[in-house]
Image (cartoon, rainbow, N blue to C red; front, side, top):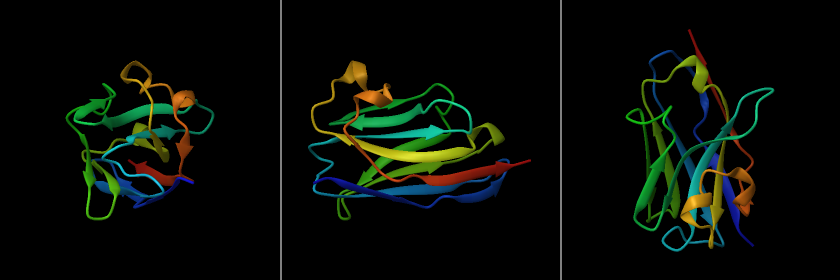
Length: 124
């Protein structure tokens, strides 16, 4: 059974930074793909970033501001978020999947395992 636990959310002002972590049990990120998605109130869950093996993918809206990485010592996926904007506000979810193909990384419904989410609020 794969379990994902996110942490690190909070409230920051426009231009601030936050670091999110996703610790996995029952899955190894060297084998599984891991993704970050977010969902704002009244909106669909949207892709933020993912890595699969050595390939990294970002949504255009977060390129050059967010960095996804992994901490193998903790079996954790990290999302470093810089230059945060109010439109980055939402619940951030970690996802994992062993067999997802690259062309499906940006589709939330294609991922098998999800964490409970962590709230990120960016104020002006």
